Length: 332
Image 1 (spheres, rainbow, N blue to C red):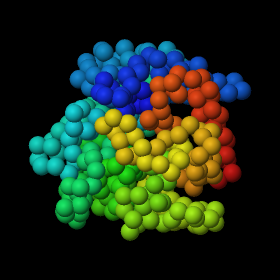
Image 2 (cartoon, rainbow, N blue to C red):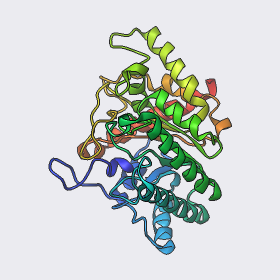
Image 3 (cartoon, helix red, strand yellow):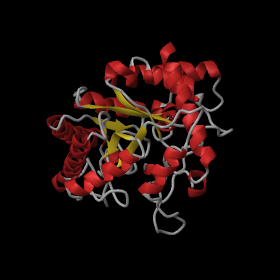
Image 4 (tube, helix red, strand yellow):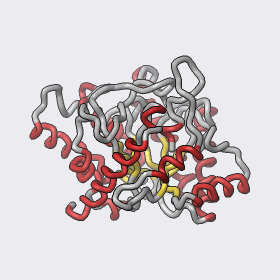
């Protein structure tokens, strides 16, 4: 549901947010050869959800989602400054805000679980430290600080029967390259309660070393053989930690919107400039997925324009590609 929220707003050049009801309707309207979406992943913040909602208010939201025939899968904790949380790399006050956001997510997830609309999925987090400038002042100490915060957050999640999934994305300090992300995962060292959420668009930029040239596995002008050799290297390192998955496309650009700029550009599934064979690349990440507790996959269309989101073709094309990914897993 976050493509209706992330990068949207009332600032200069921003498009307005799209309501939860409208996003649910567009999702429900999609159909490919009689197959439809099973559910949604969900961002736990305004305007879709007030994180301070009462249990009764949350149950009403759950009722609305279920009325469309949907489950809720993974949910996104509001860990960023300006929502509930603050940087995982910050002082004790910032850390407490970050942990409060994880507690909020666990509370809402529990209501959804007890309602019955949610039966699986993780809680998504990231370092909530936008950009690399501050992290780069002392990478070792700052990574250690993030690891400590994530350990505390993972303990909170585990106590609530949940798992945290850290989305690797080049805009988040300490998680901005495949190697730095691996350092975080290994530093936390709690694979049963803290894992990785792989996004095809963002991890493509991991390969290219966009924010960490020293960790680049590919360079412009690469051949197909070079691409898949590099892809295997990256996925072999990160797949064992992967507990949640975003199907996506990327055209090689770094582009966002609003306060979520400078990140992997999500493109329509059939974008002619897309760099990825979505189905083949998904197989690298989803090998043995069930053994890691993955029960659903999600499409991430952050930064899609409102015009793109309002076009039924967008949703049907996405659904068709996700069906293709799902059906291909029998061969993995």
